[in-house]
Image (cartoon, rainbow, N blue to C red; front, side, top):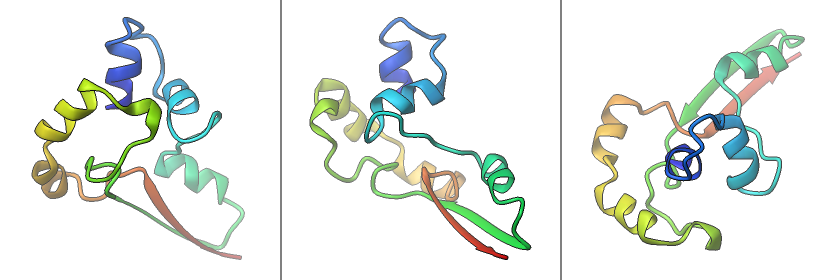
Amino acid sequence: MLWVRYALFALKPWRSLDEVYAHHLESPGTKAYTIVQAKQLFSEFDTVEIRTILTHGDLLESQAGQRHQGILLILGRKFWPRTLLKRLFPRSGLFMLIEAKK
């Protein structure tokens, strides 16, 4: 959704998701990692368990930051496919839980 707003709708479809996250998600410089990238970061550990979950933020169920207000958010909240996301992609959220043991 952030990429649609800050890349596609901004007429900058070449912007990567990493760039959009770094400039528009949470604080400046925020990074998001794939499970593969997280496993690489924890490659020195003996065991690593990683899972991601959908949260209220992924489902547009909570308040958004001041800079994310506007008609697109209102429409997004109204039409966001929460039930579909929960059923088809329950482990695809931005919240990553990592348990690692040395």
